[in-house]
Image 1 (tube, rainbow over the protein chains, first blue to last red):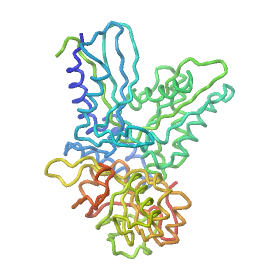
Image 2 (tube, rainbow over the protein chains, first blue to last red):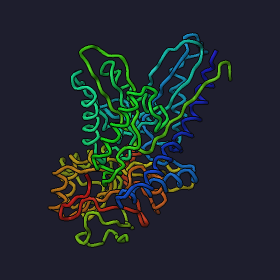
Image 3 (cartoon, rainbow over the protein chains, first blue to last red):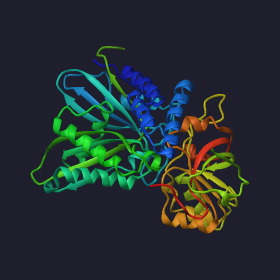
Image 4 (cartoon, each protein chain N blue to C red):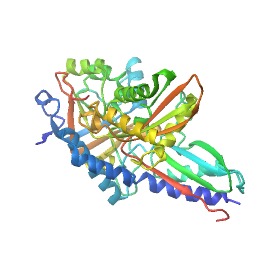
Length: 280
Length: 171
């Protein structure tokens, strides 16, 4: 039996740590971009992004003030049991993890009163065989999340239509989502499924290609197309609008080709927590 | 080579693309504070800060830790303020600091009022925090991180994104 107090405490600590640290894989991609970049303004901005990461790490402080809305992707074994309410434990974990961070959540999208504790998170549950429990945490800032999009293409648009749709979404986003960005692309399912896939694509290691060769080739072609836009770092031009692209796919209807894009800013902060059963 | 500017500098000397270091005061204001500014103006009430020659920084920091004056404090997306900005420029706002593109209406109001739009690097919140030497809450404390604060910067690295002639460097 999983102990809810342990889940909340462990999640809090993981979130607190994740919010103060940019994904090291993304830092490696940023370093490579800074070496390659020829546009002097873009190079100036990349230099500041890397210096910022160093200051945040040495000062144990937040690299970005937008510590985001908390997204949790939960994989719970069908045989897992809990000594309380899992949803409440996860929300409590989020509250604890954001104790020192910025509180960015409002109760109602129109009434807009701050909840004061950065809860509730957005949670997606997957029920899987077995009795395991693991959670991916993604801090999603508004600047990049606001610029994502979904297109319900017709099947005839095919691969080229997908590349065009993603490139158009990024072109419209321009400097707003804090490029260089990571692109999560969800293809297939339904409109909502494609959106969730585009988030799950960002849970893969940054820069790691899909295990499906067709998807991996599509990732390369989308990345090349987006980097040909000359939006560049912070909209200043140059070759580095996106650092990586990850594609996830799912079966879909004979009459549909949904494509969703989630844009993740360069300040990529996330965590993966595997919980231990019976631990208190 | 970066040009050093203050609140009193002649902004017409700046050109889009210039690298600058800003030392001076700016008020933080985001979506909610802008909405209240405009509601006050519509009601004929004074704004809590004088817009004449003012600088606004689009930012909402993380909470300050004990012994620190402010938390991490990078720029937010300026475009969300675009609906409100021309009114404030016409009231005398001179310097805006943020990130990302502005609307045509904002660019035109910048040109009309000989103001400038400067960009900080989005996500460089810890670096920017290190350049803040004073912070004082001046309005709307109920807005939490969105409250209006008067910040004083020492050598904040910025680029001129839109100059007083309306020229813009952003893609």
